[in-house]
Each structure stands twice: as C-alpha cells, then as structure tokens.
Amino acid sequence: MRRPRVLIADDHSDLVKAVCRLLAIDCDVVGTVADGSAVLDAAQRLQPDVIVVDLNLPNLSGLEACRQITQAHPEMKVIVFTAMNDPDVRQRSVEVGASAFVFKMGGSGDLLSTVKRLYSDGADQAAR
Image 1 (cartoon, rainbow, N blue to C red):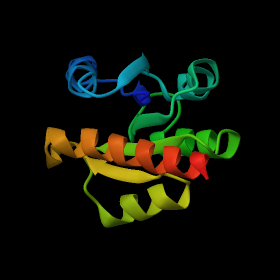
Image 2 (image 1 turned 120 degrees about the vertical axis):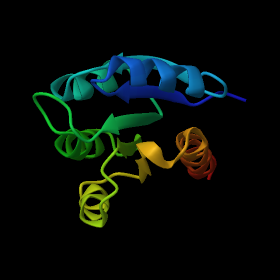
Image 3 (image 1 turned 90 degrees about the vertical axis):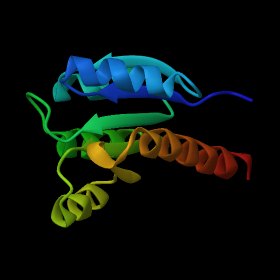
Image 4 (image 1 turned 30 degrees about the vertical axis):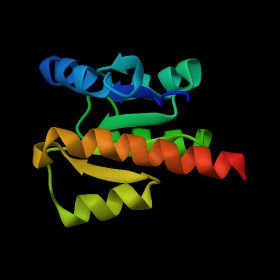
C-alpha cells in the first residue's frame, strides 16, 4: 500500500526536523518549505496527498496558504498545525478549507494519526 505523501510548511527548523522524523514512520515527507508564499508552488510541483501548514508563516499566512491550496487543489488535504489552540482560529481554518486542525502541543501522535486518517479517507473516496 502506498504511503501518504506529505509536504510540511513551517518556519521553525527544529520543529520541522522533529515532524519529519515523526511522519517518516508511516509517511513519505516529499518536501518542506519555511515561507507561506512557497507553499502553493511546492504543492503544485510535489503533488502531496497531505500538507501540514503552520498558521504563522512569513510572507503569507497559513490560513491564506490553505485557502489558495484548497482552491487550486481540492484533492489535497490541508492540516493547520499551530500552537494557537483558539476556537476562532479553528473555525476560520475550516472556513478556508482545512481538512483538520492540530494543536502543536497536543502530543506527537495527534499529527501522525490525523495525516493517516485524512489519507485513508481520501484513498477510500478515490476508490469509489
């Protein structure tokens, strides 16, 4: 079975390294970007199944990046990954097209299980 292809967009290099190690257990991390304006290009070029987007990115917010990705590539799942555990931010994430919202401080298993669930849901829909 094919593993989920994941793109990570976060400007904290130590966190990106940790997330890459975590996701490498069950996923193929196809790329990382540290700038919101680079996410759409990377998504087009790398064709990930799931994109993990930090809320606070330089040059283009994670929410705007999410909106652009989901409009251009509705088949790609976007996870907003943030330290801001705020119901308003969670609601806004859904409004711009995020498939999931994961709180960075929620535990490392939350992100991996969310990626796997979204990928599995997408594969099930593609098989229909």
